[in-house]
Length: 211
Image (cartoon, rainbow, N blue to C red):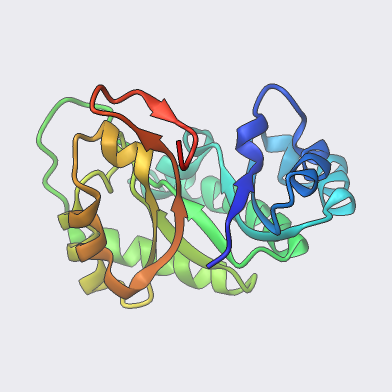
C-alpha cells in the first residue's frame, strides 16, 4: 500500500499543473490527479500537467457533473458526446501514467427511491470499462453519497453484471451517507483499488488522516 495526496487537496489554491512540486515536497510518492475543467482534458493545459509531473500518478479523477452522468443518458446524442469527453480524460490519464480512473457516474438528484435496471447499467459500465482499457486504465467506481454508489448493494448488484469492475472507497462520502464503511468493504471485497482517507469525530467533523 502507498500513501499519496490528491491534487484536489489544492483545489482553488494551486492550479493542477503546479501541484506536483508541493506533493513531492510533502514526500508523497504517488498522487491522484483531479482534472477540474474541460481545458485540462486536452491541449495546452494537459501538456503542462504532463510536463510538470514529478511523482507517480496512481489515478485520475474528473469533475463528475461536467459529463459523467450523461454517460448513462437515454439520449444517444448526449451519451455519445459524453463518451468523447471521457476518452479525452482517459487520454490525459494515459499520458500521466495513471493506473485508475476514479468514477462517480450518475447522480441521485431527485429525492425518490431509485429502482435500478442493473442489466442496462451493466451494459453501459462494461462499455466504459472496455473503453478505459484501451488507454491502459482501470475504471474504479467510487462510493459517493449523492451518486448511485451510495449504498453497498448497488456495487454488489452491478458487479454481477460487470465482472471486471473495481472500486474506490471514500471514507468522508460514506460518513456523509450515514453508512458504515465495513458494509461497503464487504460488498467491494477484493475489488478495492483506492481509498480516499480522512478522519471524523462523533459530531461528523472532518480532520486530516491520523488526527
